[in-house]
Length: 163
Image 1 (cartoon, rainbow, N blue to C red):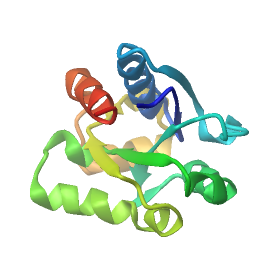
Image 2: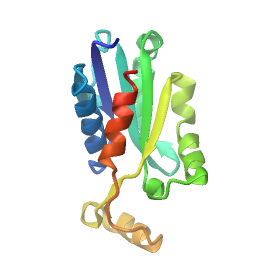
Image 3: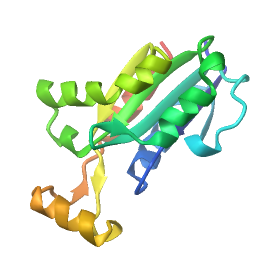
Image 4: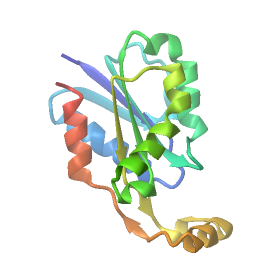
């Protein structure tokens, strides 16, 4: 049984932070002490039994804050249960093809640490938070604006890690 969990994440516009907070809440709801913090701020991890690491996927990759966290802590993580999650707008449509693309985004992370669980979640898109060039690119790709995160699914996944 786990006593203490760390949920750490990289984020660009805040959507992945919301997912990490929801995972932390689900773990706390099961009586486990859980800390949620950005990967760039996560320090010593020795006191955690479970480490959950997540990132949004941009251009087919995790953000460097998440992979840098794994690199910094690779020795300590080898002795811990580690789970990965990734968020991306392509998961608005949960298809085998989109899951495969998301799985490919974990390649670098999995070369550093082998997780016992992974999951993929849809994200959130707010045009007003994007820079003008990115906003134009996203609109050209016909990406729909909105919050597509399924917090029930996110919470269920967080609890499933404790079994």
